[in-house]
Image 1 (cartoon, rainbow, N blue to C red):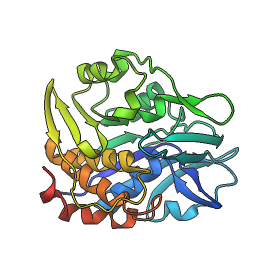
Image 2 (tube, rainbow, N blue to C red):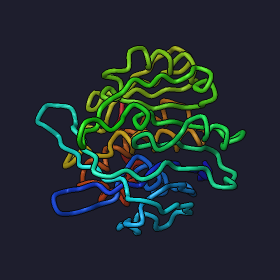
Image 3 (cartoon, rainbow, N blue to C red):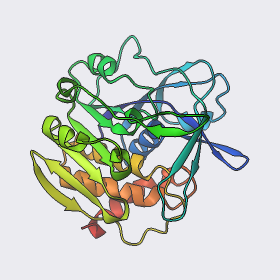
Image 4 (cartoon, rainbow, N blue to C red):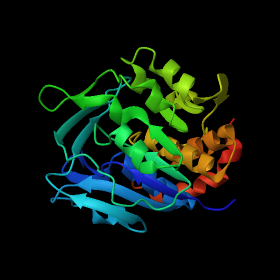
Length: 277
């Protein structure tokens, strides 16, 4: 299959690990994953004038706006609990450039209220659009906390989306959002961490497993990497279940290092697909 061109949209962030700052954000993981799998990636992002991770853009075509402060997160993982995020700074939203390149897919990958869905659906024109929903269900709470807020999205907008991905932790306070996604979006992946994912096509659900031999170090970016691999496969024209296996294989690699340090290895995912049920 040919390597697709994919436009990825969203903030590239600073993620704090102790005294270190590393690049992060859904769009960062998506762009690096899809590039490692062979895509031609065009990243549209906004970072601050303080952005310190220029290597994040290596090998990508980039439309970057520099304004304000770079979005800055700290991720905490309580034993057996759900991830706790704190946000110290937030860059302005990502605006469409004057022209988008032709592409097999526009992958909207917001991290937190940084991509307006209606605006980007219009900007995409006739290009298929894929969404990873977590950036629309998060907002800034008291102090530096990140909280979930109900995503009251118009079904007419969802009906213009080709593919969607979400995870269990995204839907904790979202009522019937999964049902609405499945009603309006033709192909949906719903992830369950180490229990695999459901691929839902036209109301029919198929369970896909995980790679059984991953040596997990840090789960940060696993969901973003899964979505990126899944959308890459769909952009290539693969069947949804096959695309989900590629996403699971890619995610199994990113968890084997801290932050995004194993992203250059994501091309190894092709050799892991056969072990995923």
